[in-house]
Length: 104
Image (cartoon, rainbow, N blue to C red):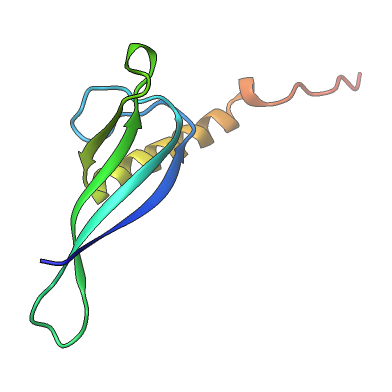
């Protein structure tokens, strides 16, 4: 079966968890690898997603190691939506706003 891989990057502003994993992943930029396989027997070229991986670089005593954490498109989109919502909430909080000038 013919396969292809595409790579992209996603940046999380906040620490996050993805899927059912209880491991908290630190905020930062991560590479996403999507593997797709060619659907045979069609009169045109079409691919279907076979797997999605989040590349997680080790930190601390695991520095220098990279793991491919298998995930799904839906889990990844959910983690990104939660990160966006948390960032918007933090930006709207009073603590995040600049102090107002006293005009009295």
